[in-house]
Length: 201
Image 1 (cartoon, helix red, strand yellow):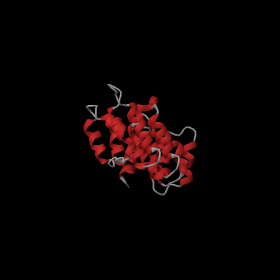
Image 2: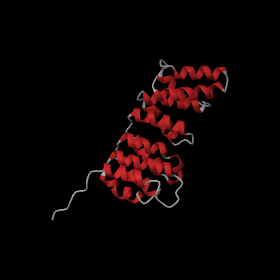
Image 3: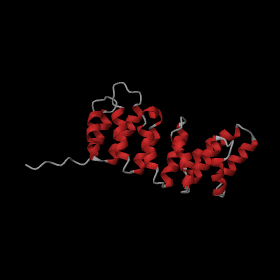
Image 4: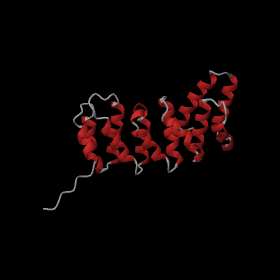
């Protein structure tokens, strides 16, 4: 069992156990390696399914590359509970669906959902998709206003832009150097960018 699945399993078993022995047995069944994909897919649309059931089914299907999990995983990526977001981001990175980067970019750049943008930002860095750099630049640029409360997300954008090393990030990273909490990581990120081309004399 990999680290991400182990973390999900521990959390799901705790939630299910609080609902009684039947739910605990159901959780064990959904987590079992030999559970049929069709049964997992049916959970995603089942009336009355608990959140932990839908999450488990979506995670298992996503990690298996089954695109029926896509919509559920995108919803979980923007959940208020960070562990659910982290699990969804991991499964989406394994899913390989071409819609993933566009969805993550939409979530990361939505000003009404900035509080939940951390995992979409990290997912964009992991995907290295065409949407990744523009979305991180847009998100970071919006977070450079004075006394913005989302410093952790701004730091994730700075680190991600440094990792992606795209020269388009130079202006926003340079602007980030003026912010005390971002100055050092922004300088480090700028060092990772390709040197600007010199114009001809």
